[in-house]
Structures are given as C-alpha cells and as structure tokens.
Length: 337
Image (cartoon, rainbow, N blue to C red; front, top):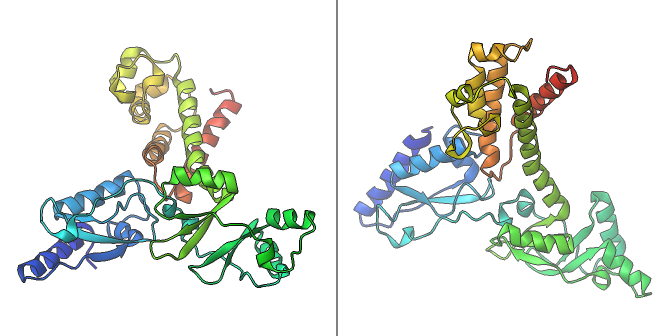
C-alpha cells in the first residue's frame, strides 16, 4: 500500500486526470487516523503534522478541515488546493479552532432512556453505569430532556409525582459539535454536562465535567512533569558552569542571550551535558550517554506537549516523563542534587 507523499501523489493525479477529462474531481475521504497512519505515525504531533502538511503542499492538495485539531476517528476530505487549482469544490477554509466535537466523549453515542419509561428504568441505568445524568430521547435526533439525580431529588423533595421519566426531567443543554471548546467548557461547568449534536442533527455524544477533568489531566499532567524535569535540571547544573560554557551549548529560550542556566532549552541542556568535560563537573555516578539519551526523549516529548495535540501523549511517552521525573527525585533523595 502506498505511503505518505507517494499515496498523496496518486490521489492528486487521479483528481487532475478527472479534471482533464472534463469531470469534477472526487475528493479522497479518509479518517484522520488513517491519514496519520499513512505517514507512519500513530498519533498527531509536531513531526507528524509537519510531514502531512508538507506532503499535501508538495502535491497541490489540501483538506476540508484541519486534521490537526479534529477528532482522530472523524472523516476528512482531501481536495485539490484552490491556490494551485481553481474549482468551486476547493474553496473551503481549514479551521484550526479546537471544538467540542474533537473530544472522544463527543463522538460516543450516549446511552439514553425514553420519556415514557418508569423512573426506576432510568435510575437503574444510571446506577449500573455510574451516570450523574441521562439523556431522555425518543430517537437519535429527538431529545426530550435530561434526567439526573438532581432533577429527581428536586421533584421528590417538593412532593411531586415522579413515576415516569418525563415527570422528572429537565431541559437538556445541547451544543453543536462545531462549538469552540472554550465556549463549551463554560456550559459544562455550569450544568455538569452538554449533549453534542452533529451536522446531521444526530446526538453524537455527551461531554460531562468528568470528561473535561480527564482531558485536563491528560494535558496538564505532561506540563507538570516537564516543568519538574526542567526544574531539577536547573538545580543539577546551578553554579557549575560559566556563562560562556552555557552559551556554547546554545539553545536559549526565545532566542535571547543566555544569562544563566534558566535560559537553556532542553536541547541546550542535552548539548551541554553530552560534552564529557562538562559532565565531569556534575560529579554524578551516572552513565552520561544513557542520561543524555533519555533527556533527549523528554525534549522530543516536550515539543508535543507545548503544541497542543487533541490525541494527548501515548502511554509510553507518559511513562518516559514519569521515569525521568522519578530519576531526579531519586538523585535528590541521595543528596546528589
């Protein structure tokens, strides 16, 4: 199976041949995951995204949506680029905005209950799945409301009849899957959830406060680990090198003149410590090459962390960060730092 740019070249040739024969070019439809895998990657990130964008550009192609921010299993169309070929089909603008529809939970069909079912049916489902709320729906497009422990308790406390689901439900909060993520978070924070409606009017999923918390941990966790590692590195080299030696390693933050160890990037730390003479100044009973090799892995992961990827890190990448942070903790515990 052709991979990467070779495959895109075949796609571009097919479309241009169609135009040459007087026909409209048929877009190539794939999932974002398939597109990423065509280029030999398992997830999106700076390296993968750059390879795909360059491949599209070299072959005069574009996509109808920005593959870097959508849900990874969503469909995407590859088109002839309007900058290189003029066709009404091509005048679509790639959208880099992170939207609620990019979250996994927004793409998992929700469990629901019919409004005419007994209340015990809804509570049983909620208990079995540990749900705080449950959509009340007659079909995949028609939402009658939402039932929750709060809506049930409010009615029971007022002595209201609450035998059927419809008697205990509230109005449902529904947002289009195209709603910007930051706007959706405000609604979720207020109501604890939001139902996500697709362009075809189907309810695609339900995103809860728990989902947002989990997403936050996926994003914030790596930031915290990277911050810890950089902090330990500054402690490790503090006072051991001159400004000239630090400057020789290069890799300052934001291209500024290096005024101290805090101005180095992770790449700069790698270059500084891969030098045997510099390494000896640390007086560590640790293998230099292994240390620098793992530090360089952290450097590469940091690039993904600092450029938001909706796919998060792989388990292996997360473990690499945890291992490096734990390594430094051990050095502190033994008094090496």
